[in-house]
Length: 211
Image (tube, rainbow, N blue to C red):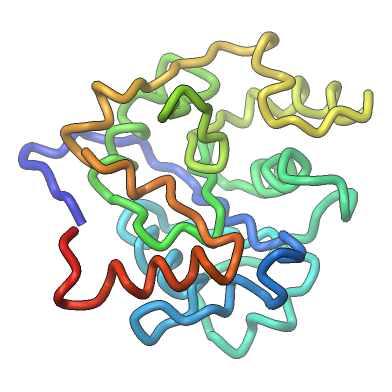
């Protein structure tokens, strides 16, 4: 994991982990997939405990994860089955702090230095979001609780795209040039959706693999 000297100061924030995906392509619960001997959810929580003391897992199946004995609060979707925007909304609504870092549970290479950088930018914006390969990374972003009304308005209209409310709030895009010093390969944004993705991650983590 890339660590930078003179880490920027970050606000006190909550951390929201989305574990509500149905994993249709993978065929099993991705949060419980083991990477380096630990379930993905455990790995994600361990990374985020250095950044927040208010960890929230958004899931409608909390019973699956209680045996992991994680230092988290489980929160269900306000309206189950309505996508990741609802998951972020539900976690943000439960957050104890004005800002929350939101990530998916299936990102095995979360980078604390990059996450700290995103958090350091949050004070002047409602959303701080990377854009990598020309695509937004809304499940690796910072959201203000001030976004809640705008999120709800688009959800009430049946919109599910996370970026659907962005025209109603102040957004700070973080481009590749800013990301590169922390994560030049963009591994932070790699997620596991298929058995092939999981195998790729296993290969990348082998001692002989060039990273």
